[in-house]
Structures are given as structure tokens and as C-alpha cells.
Length: 144
View 1: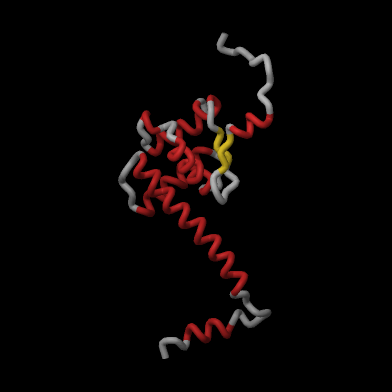
View 2: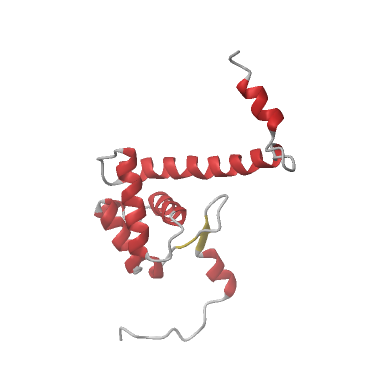
């Protein structure tokens, strides 16, 4: 009885309703029985020290998904190593929701900085062969 196949397929519209898209990203976080049974998610919440009662909180799940996507790693273990390195770099010693909130804040700011750097590169483009001398001269002469 554990391997019962549903008699009717789930309509596409209902399947789409089970996916939450995080703002400004292409992250798809499946909510429902598949999400609750996802071993990678459970490994990540265990790694981050999330309490049992908070593991299926949508807000926490969305933040973990965003943090996981930030690592840009395909392998779950590699993602955890990258997250651990961020935790060490930031000097964080907390666990659970507080850790997730701090990591989420950092990754959101990093994403925003990447976006701003791209926008700045469109404004301040090096002129062919001059390495943007006018800009560097202006900055260099501010203190003199």
C-alpha cells in the first residue's frame, strides 16, 4: 500500500500551484509531500541546526533555498562546504533560525552587490586602450 500510484494524474495548473518562486531568482521550492521527503533539504536543515518544529516553516524553507542557490553548487555536500566557509568568514557561532537569518541577509546583500557591480560596469566602461584614465585620474587627484 506504500507504493500506490494515484489513479488520476495531477493537472498542470495544480502542479504549478505547488511551486513557490522566490523574488528576483529562478529558485523553485516545491511545497508538499515531495518537499517534506526531500533528503537534501533534511540534510541541509540538520547541517544548519534547524529545530524540528521549524523545519517546515515556509519562510525558513525559502531562505534556505535562496542560500542554497547562492552557492551555485550542484552537489549538496559542496554547497554545505561553501556555506560552512561563509559561516566561518562571518564569524557566526549561532545555529538554527538565527543562523539562517544571518546567512540569508549576507547572501541577499551579496546578490545585490553583484547586481550593482554589473550596473556600474555598464556606466564605467574602460575606453579602448585607455583603461579609463579620466576616471582613475579624477579619483587619484581628490586628495591633492
